[in-house]
Image (cartoon, rainbow, N blue to C red; front, side, top):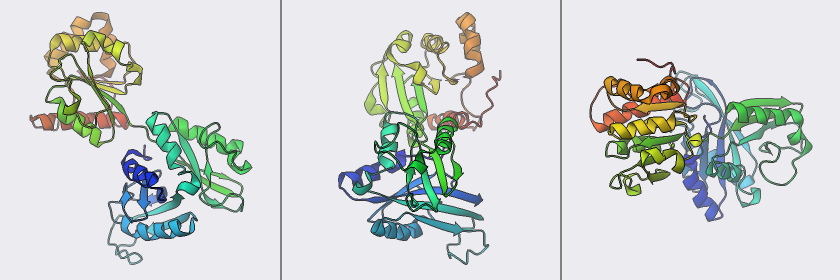
Length: 357
């Protein structure tokens, strides 16, 4: 899930509104130890301001100079940094990352229809899967470096050159959509880097009390899409949760009626009210929510599972209770960090999903 677009959007939208072209940087290849991996994105404005990181901030200053050349002549550029020398003699940056990075720089402006950023931003707004291929090397003068390939029926309306509509390239784009991974496609005269847009995880927090605030803040900081629900009007206040997509006032037994639980990747129950938590668990039992976190001690969990009856077996394999990693600390912020850390493990495929008593 490297192709994260949300951090780039404020700068992109500002420059687009002003009619000023900017440069999209795409990390297309790495070797050895590097800060980011293929598919990572950044944008660089004509002023030199940038958003997104491809390194720990070490290479971005140098990239601005390359971006100025791309803005000036419109030709996509490929920049290579080999940082495997112990003293970085080539670049003099002293990074010590012991890796190599190749970054494609692509001009995006009114003359290009702001592509591929415009289509990717539209897909992100709709929370719709999207993939794009960018030609990195070409022996075909009709398809220069920087040319874009889109899945059939996606992207701009104009018909692409035949080489970019080839069945093998279309299959690679379809595979990227399915796997959500970056990959290379080679077909005759072209080498194309194919990547899928990283869609933000959708987190539902059930219970919007004061201790839910740091959970939402951490999740928003990670660019997740956060929804909160609570039956108490004093808590279900949007102003308490800046950055959240939605704050809903609803009774727990009405949860499935007011929210589409099929559109939830993970849920955390933290209402501190036993009957409300039971109703939330009942609502989540038939829903395809892969992670269900429950705040509170093991004895409380067991009481709720016993009350669920037959539905308990539908919940148990997905349940993390007590929710969170054992990081230590009892402050609300510490508990929130433990919860979001475990969520992060799950959402990135690093969490053992076997239920543990």
